[in-house]
Length: 149
Image (cartoon, rainbow, N blue to C red; front, side, top):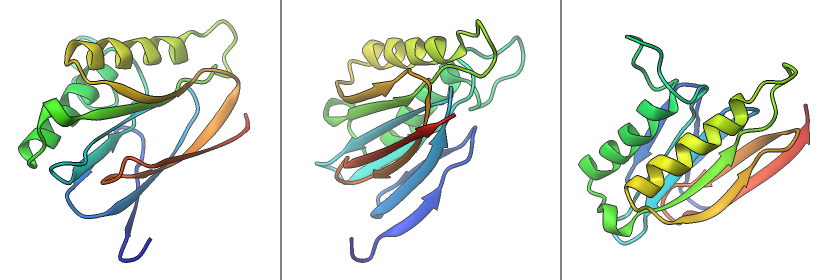
């Protein structure tokens, strides 16, 4: 794409912009929620590690903080919740046997987006493969490449 910026999103991060940006990240059991509003020209992505924040630790490494905060930032940047569409990506099985962190991350993302009545376009979750994600914040186009963990 011409005149496209590139941004690599690290775990615990959120990126929102009205400028055309190719947002990249890599996920294992983590989740990225990608949301865009094509009508108002704004979109963004988060990358959270765990489903729920523990006691007084409140930051965007946790899905119950990161997803509502992404929605808030998109709205403050000119987006309209009635136009939002979302993708959920990630949530692979952890390398730790018996861990359900990936599944719990997926569930919290789905629950919060359902609460805000934001429809889902792409859901690419679970399994045993890591994902490299490339998201176009204005069109909602997503490219997901999978590899072995």
